[in-house]
Image (cartoon, rainbow over all chains, first blue to last red; front, top):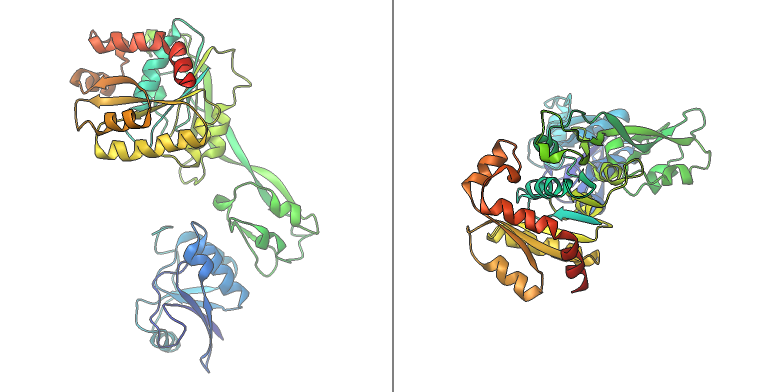
Length: 119
Length: 297
């Protein structure tokens, strides 16, 4: 399966970026082999609004079915839900650790957005 | 003649001045008061009209015909505001991000996108009668105001609707109560006015935002003057700025407890037996000459 994880850098050892729309990187991680495609999130970092929606479009275009991130706002959540992407909130640590916790069933899917827009 | 009452900073007294100017003029001319602060309209609290804002105002948003849509994603790619998201199948619309530009319908090769109105707020308009609710001075005043629905992100189309006077009676003077700030809704409220009256208070915050408001008026190529509200507090930096920039100070409203009390009771100043009330009346009766003078300078 394919995951998208927000990250502060392009490696599995990078920290999970707590922001979704304005995350520095989106890592597309293929499981179980953990092959990583790092996408720099230029557009979202610099967007005045709609950053979450743009990031959601990247997740959807890359055919990830699961997103691991720190927080997710209402518009991004709605977009991801419409595309059938499940959102899991990862409180911190590295991308590698978050993926391991996900694989071990240690993360639960977020039923709704956990922050307001522009938080 | 159109006069917009604006300010960079919120809470400086735009509505207070707008209502008092309009009621002071209402006896002498045919006056319209447009409350364009649609996120927080307040003029009607002073004027207590017998009518409410009930007329719906909408903006066009795209509707995708799922039978015609091939899911090509061109619409989502063309949307400058990321209001459309390309999903497998038909795109997802996030209506609060839509700026109603119509580019999605324009680029759709299947002509699968049409537009329909989505309500963003309501509008009220009418001539105030000499009813028992409002101040008698307001009788004959044409009031028009909008109220944005809670949660809507873009108020500009509603501001535009409040400024649309095609259904209004003929008016000699139009007073526009602008929203605070210098972003799109404030610019939309200011646009087309003959004079911008910028209300400020003599404080560092007041000065900071006044500078932005003066800059905005200049970008719009609009003559402007300043009204200092709560004069007597703070310092003289606003006066110094106006002198240096050549912006006339049109009126000073003193920091007077009686004014605050009248406002808190929803009363207009003309009911006050205070020197300030007379000064405002004189300012109002001279307003047309003042506008011409500021515009000529």
